[in-house]
Length: 163
Image 1 (cartoon, rainbow, N blue to C red):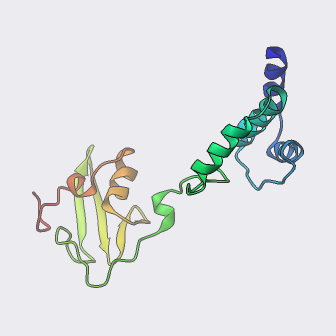
Image 2 (image 1 turned 135 degrees about the vertical axis):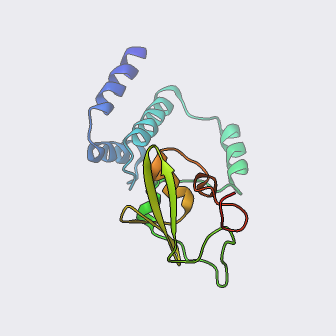
Image 3 (image 1 turned 45 degrees about the horizontal axis):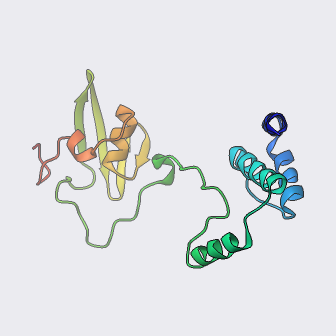
């Protein structure tokens, strides 16, 4: 049995997403819109194992149904997160202005690794290096490559000046 599982895993890993979808339809008896290779492989292998070694007992199936009745179950794998810069600025709530930020049109300047970095404050977002970002933290991440608080990175205090 162990040898056939290893062979099945190797065979599934060599298939395209379209072939995996076809295999999923044969094994489960229904189509899927999923396009995530690893998820499809895991689901197919799980179903093949359940068919070969036996599925859940009726008692376990009833208990699982009871637990799942109120649960929010995901039928498809999660979509990949998009880059913050691709989403564009979020609309600001009416009348909301963060007191730490200067008014739109002003430039924030931060010296970082020997360069003067300039970020323009927009009515809804920030412009840096020709791209628009939703938050100062997104700008700081684009600059440093890691998550950090944008207000701390640009050294903005409680009232818009340097802290």
